[in-house]
Length: 129
Image (cartoon, rainbow, N blue to C red):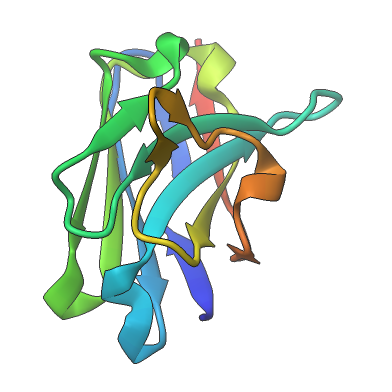
């Protein structure tokens, strides 16, 4: 699976962006997908995940109520709608894929970088104050 993130840019605080993750491979619709971000000098952190059919989603606390993840399997694309952006959301955002259907095991969600098998190149999001 190859992943390519796009849609980043420069936006003022309070603004919105929609990131896209385009995937290659016929089996993409069978896999869970996530978004991670990494700001300069900081560790990579989980942002959001979605299961294979889009019916289960999960968000990091710091984006709940502001970001929405979705997918259109017919287009092999996952989206991350980001609203009410804050300067602290500034980071490189990368989409990732896990070669299994779900984003959780029981009550535990897959939020570690090592939980995901495929990584795409990121897209820069910069939020000015």
